[in-house]
Image (cartoon, rainbow, N blue to C red; front, side, top):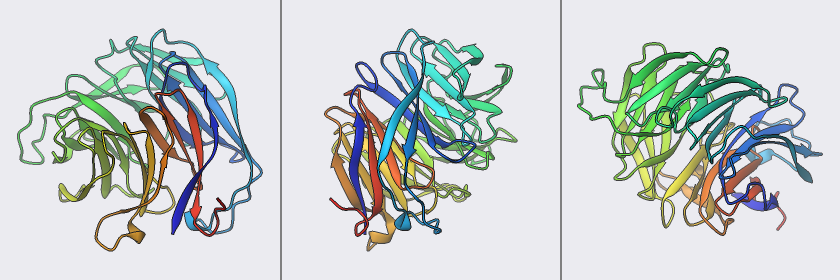
Length: 345
């Protein structure tokens, strides 16, 4: 059975709260690079330096690990108010950030230098997501749109409207988009809105290809299930629910109450379709595995009360052997993730 344990932490990663986190494998593949943003307005780049040796298997269950060291590498102090969303592309070349100050910044991950500065007036990019090739960045709009900008120039390229459901045959009123995320192949963007609705866009046509409303409150996070698939997404919301969506049919195939309060973050493992992690207002980090469930859903195989305040974000590292979370207590926490016989508590 899969297990997790807390391995290390930076208790003062951000002053007065760490609000967002995103992970990538750098171009050399030697060290994990990840980025966080917080209430203090700082975007911080970290590296996970490890002497771990990965087995020949790609399986999360077969990963091994030794000691690790979390090292802050770059502090980017461009925002004057809290950073609500950060993202880094898979090759760790570009960082995107959005803030309560109404600006979105695009920066080189290697040194933190600015690529573009975009005035979003806060309403046009509450949450940001970089395309896999780092050429575009998507932003969640208060006015029910998903906006796309060029990373190189900062030029606004297009807007996709969540109320445009002509392809799905349903009617919808535009509500604030709370979260967006590119699929791994860049062909789709998933979005979640304040009215509990979830939509998937075709990035080539800009049309809605799937639309559901599984949540009774705001959708706060989403992730694609399977590294190379666009068939299913998982969402989480303020109603405590986690929901699995079949993109092709537009139906919710599974849902469950994951935390005692709001669920603010969800992320799926990269190497297996059956594992995901969630975080919530209760401060817990949980890992779910479909292989351990006796039904069509997911079973909780690991649960840690990690944060003393609400946990805002959780992400898997590229080989799925580790997780990182951030919370309102200002801490950034690292977890080992492996089969129970590999983790010594």
